[in-house]
Length: 363
Image 1 (cartoon, rainbow, N blue to C red):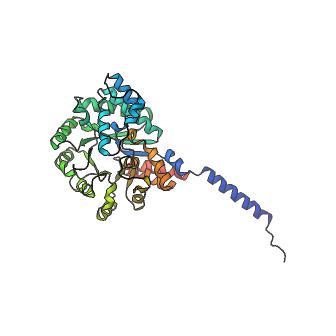
Image 2: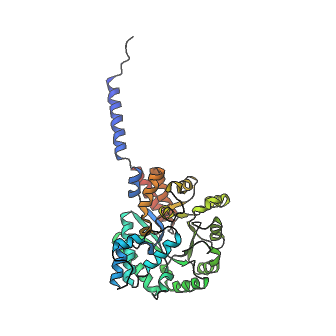
């Protein structure tokens, strides 16, 4: 029996197709490349939590403030902690060296430079005025330095920012009202109010009247809920504080009815994976539910929270997730698009960045 023969052009076609496939695979964007190449927004970031040991040591020396550390290495070693409260103890101790407007400028500008490296083109920054006003630092000193750094980043490389002032939930309602009053003269520079600090024992309901007053003045509202606190805290944030976003929210998954509501309303969850790992919300990143939330259709975003203390900025969080869950390029692109969909941006700007993400992934 004579062997079948294929015409010579057939082999040329096969060779051409293999060459084409090799070229496609050579230039197709890998998931890790997507992490660095795709633009993104950060929506859950405490500016005081970006205080790198080197800068803390430098500012402490500049302000002649004694700290119980003899070197940057000792400061870095002190950044080890095991739960939310032990972290907060270190966090507030570090913030104590911030005294002058230039200090807040330096702190914020250093973070914004990290954003530029990570292709974060928009950031909505939390700041905690009570941490500073309690030490005699004026509200306008705090916001003055932060704003100046944001203006500089906008002028130098076109980055956009928004500011969210947070109430410390371990303090009283009365003190939160006082902070709101201090924020009102800067209303045009502050887009919203939030709620942070020690969650357990300080439910959102404690601040319902403060948030109602803030909404009267046109502030958008967000709140930390469902990090260490139960799903009931998420319910309260939604129903009593009328928030536009839930910060963290990972424990909402324990309440299926709540999850269905979050999905149906497309209520954003600003999740911080490395923070959750460091604070023992999960014992292993493989136990984290972000990937599962994404697959269920939750409008979930990736953020760094307090990156100087948790060992990772936005791209570090993306990379850790990709390596743990083998996220695809499409999933990383969706998370980046989610960050703009959940941001306090106009629809035209959201669409522009989402289209940019689609264009890059299609290259």
